[in-house]
Length: 247
Image 1 (cartoon, rainbow, N blue to C red):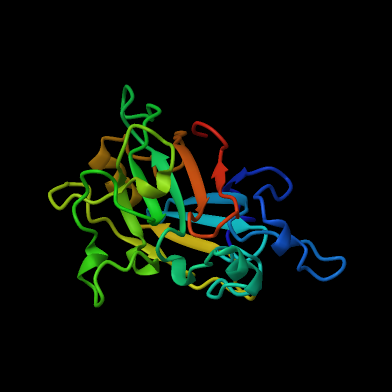
Image 2: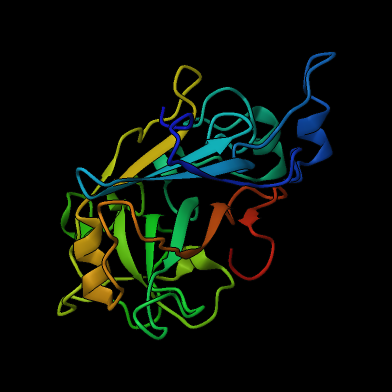
């Protein structure tokens, strides 16, 4: 909803869908229709609201975000994917993940240094050395679904497979930190993801980053990467933005 704002930064993926789908799924589309995975990111937007100190993050997919097989429902698995032995998990559960990781600090004067600091989104697993996620205390144990959404530490110096780099630390001065998932159930009427990280300057201070000048007179920057995908969908690809390294 904030894509047209003058202070929005838009980060585009390639201009066309590039996440692979098995032929059985692609060939199931009606004539003239092209199947596109809901893991295929079109672009990401960032908007820092200087008045409220909120960082808003939007993920625009080519179709319904999280609808792996593009059957029109991110909560169900198509018969074609079932035949292939895959699952389109509902509610970003199990190995299904969408995330944005950010490098905020570590360089001289509290600028980004090329190492990721925090990660926001739906985890597919705990990083090595992580304490139990807060969602583990919910009924049913650790569900690894949309209820685990939040801000986490980035759990490794390596950036590969970021969906498994969500790290919780019960004694970290950084955590917990407030964040809001505005659309945890993407559907045709509202297909994209919109997240808000509140008290963004407080988060930056906690990780050692220089605070943002809320008058808007001084530039600031972050490095980032994004991921969407699952290891349970048997043949459907994943999306990484960028395809290597950080932006």
